[in-house]
Length: 119
Image 1 (cartoon, rainbow, N blue to C red):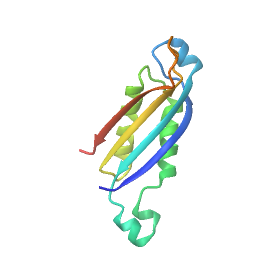
Image 2 (cartoon, rainbow, N blue to C red; image 1 turned 90 degrees about the vertical axis):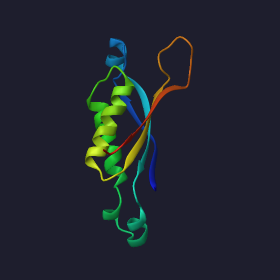
Image 3 (cartoon, rainbow, N blue to C red; image 1 turned 90 degrees about the horizontal axis):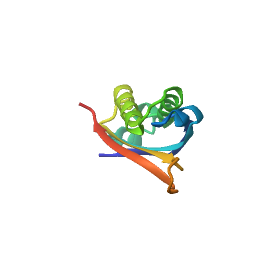
């Protein structure tokens, strides 16, 4: 199976267990891999035969910045459901990184990665 890979979608979102995190917000980064056949796009060189990755990026950022979730697991599930419903793909692997999470021990990021297939 072929893949479209989108790395490093950055946004400021209001997600977290604490009220402070949901009020102040934090920085996040998304990586997405969409599985679909790219044969026709490669053969005919037309956008109609593939997925417009700008549309995917815009949709992910819209969900991430217009809604609030306590868990990034819930954010990831919402995003993958919407991608699978809106685009003609077989599956998606989505990673959401919470950059510099507010915990006592400093870490670069915490991440959730999920893989979902179209039913």
